[in-house]
Length: 187
Image 1 (cartoon, rainbow, N blue to C red):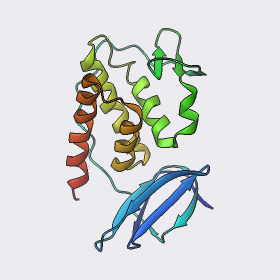
Image 2 (cartoon, rainbow, N blue to C red; image 1 turned 90 degrees about the horizontal axis):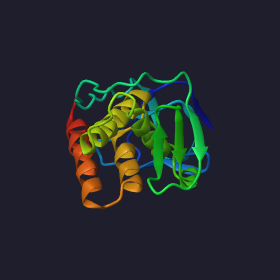
Image 3 (cartoon, one colour; image 1 turned 45 degrees about the vertical axis):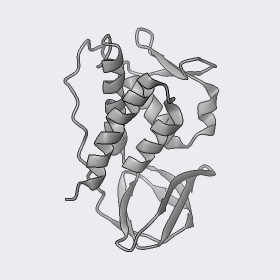
């Protein structure tokens, strides 16, 4: 068992990496001959395949986002209520409640974190329809990058959560295009 207390960087030259958290796949990558640097956020992990050593965390640049508009102050605490909902997840910013479909209990942690971050984004970004949704998506991606998640996990979360309806595809590509830029970035 690997216990991580805070965002931590690692490097590997193993050809394959398979790390689980709570018996769920958490980080799975096929690695080329150049190797890979990656982060793990705080948590307890079970390394199934691969060897790696600690190094400086990968400091991914954050995705550019507009200044907050129609800002509602963040509550001291949010209540999480699992119940079936057609929107999969939604937030009541007036009462500080996040309603989430119970299906999220079956998804990897990074998926739920991305959804939760998106819903938090509705405090600073609300009232502008699809623009607000896109800004909330970027807000969430930036939260996950700061916490120690990797762009590939954000990409996977978006694929699992957002549908392939036209409006959702526009949101997906808004974040995915930015993740491509981040992944090609080198320090």
